[in-house]
Length: 284
Image (spheres, rainbow, N blue to C red):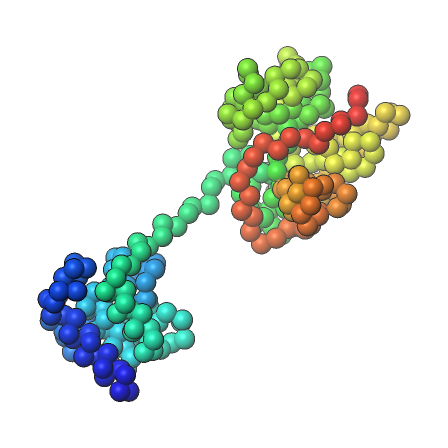
């Protein structure tokens, strides 16, 4: 209690236009018995920044003291309760005073979740093959995985292509979620032939010579002996390594470290990149 009383006097003294206070351009105002600040939901980076303005004012310090003395409701300044324990403590008032005498960083601007553009697609579940931006979009039984390109139609039907939902022109993807990425514009080796389009897919061959390679239909998974394996979804992806975010059957499909082939996690934060298809594609 003695420390709180001393802090109360400190807060009151801060309201006078003295040198140190003026040096930090804090606006003096007469202390009030009860401050009346409008609650706000804006995020505050400093303890005591009740209105999320980026600084701590005298009125806000007075309000914190009143809250500590149970003379003001906590919901008037949720930023005063730094640890969220339902009370304003001496240490929290000290931190607020220090912020008032120093500099309080500006509130962070929330980052919006990017809209699904086809760089990732649902693997399995009720939204199988639909564009997604997180596993939530594919719930309850799907996973949001990296989209790969497969030629649909033309003389290279079923071959991998570099620009899902776009085309490769002069070494650069035109259109689709990977527009601007480098690509190979040779037909059958990164690009599709006349009459074919590079379609995005989350499906892979589940077995055979082309296991874990992107596909649109079972015929795309035909072994060299003519056996057509299943083209489907696994609801699993490589977590880290060379094929981070790519659909997989099991851990052997995920090289280069990482946590192997895993089931969905609650939220995905991968930045879409045009990850090349696995090298060493068997000849067709």
